[in-house]
Image 1 (cartoon, rainbow, N blue to C red):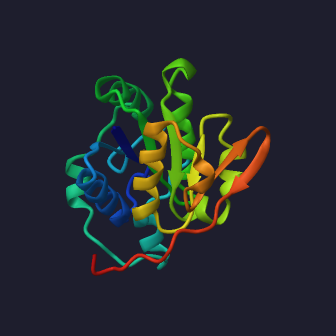
Image 2 (cartoon, rainbow, N blue to C red; image 1 turned 90 degrees about the vertical axis):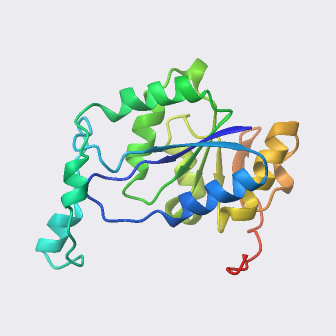
Length: 196
């Protein structure tokens, strides 16, 4: 299966996405092809207001850091256009987003840039979808199919296997979705052994 992991980060956010690295590794170990689309270095984001960690640093809400490398690699083109190009060239079977509450609007903006006929199955994971899975789907304007709640390392592998087989998602731990107009939230996956 071809999976495009998407990290719709805000420009200037000094956030390391450990989930993206872990999920990439786990998915590759299970034979999946994985691509990445990360928006951290896009200085402009259409009409969305962006608050960087530098502003938080000035207000003493974030630890000071050197953003010189980020400024050297800044992108000024439109992230939605680049996302469409990435989806077209990678041709994924699944789009998997890792989002927090402040990144969620960016993710939806990217998804809305794709023509409905060319949008693959989409799943959200991360802090915001874990705590508000129904809201994450309901506010997506029809662009999100599933949410993974809790730790996603095991759930995403099982989710991909069931999706590939065309199986029943109701037995996959951590998955939330709509079926026949009814919202379903499966039990949370078990704890992950950090040593593995």
